[in-house]
Image (cartoon, rainbow, N blue to C red):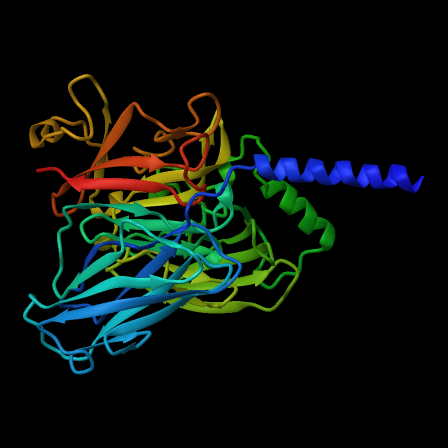
Length: 445
């Protein structure tokens, strides 16, 4: 009997070993700056950027970065966080994380605009490999980027990546924001407008309740069922997908039950009023609570929307200033076959700031590489928020991955036209990581 047990264990060991031998080795884990060129404008007091690795490690990663200043003195004119010693910044990417942030802060008040500071990765622990973006130059003036490649920091979660990412082509910057960091957005234009968090997604319905009413457990369950997006026609519970303010659910002075998927508590009573022409008053309470929270939200013309978090009971930063982003990559509610459906990897344009885009079909004579100013002038630009949408990728079938039949043109508010193509999605055999799509863009000139 012992002999049979020994043989069984031996064969099991051989089986495990052979399976391990068949597993393909992981690709190199590379480290890169978030961009190779950035600018800090006259009105900005600081600038942040990140060091990114392809995948999280089980132990801390130590990175040594050399700095070289041009026309400025470290300490007198600028400082960094983390601080530099002997022209070296030591940064740690914590275990389980894929990035670390470096911030440059102005000390001096006046700059000529021709000053700069360069950052170069000198060494990295853990056997990581330097990627293509191992150096970064920060210029003390606004830049108009010639183009770059970026890996968007959608964060963990794959198709349900935790972040939304805003990209500004002209400055080579991306801003990642947790999808669940906000509940409602308040329009900063002349009209009354309140948007639901469509990237959770959130749903809502009007009621005859008061904000301090306590909803029974049975009614709460019924409301959650009614407001769930369970593959049925429930467009009446979500904001208009075109983004029109006139098509939002929440109107002034009424009480709504709002269902925030992925958050706890999940169900809230909400009422929004106008305190004056430039201020909203938000009142809200959890469905089973009579305790009402109140928050005044002033309009800020620098942003499309001002955002509020129920968890923190305060205004929170989500979108960059409206003139400082062109596209948003995110998971969001959209439509499919006549029903609301939660899509991964959606791309929306910042049409409220005048951004337009065009889809360009690749032909035998026209492609991303050779597209010209004349081609761009003849392109059919659209201000539809979803002109890119999900069209750039396929998640199933033989052609899963980035669509190879089209690229895009994006015209920013200053009139710059960038050509944009998606390189990796993280499905099929494209070699990417879901939640960290790779894009490339360049100024058309």
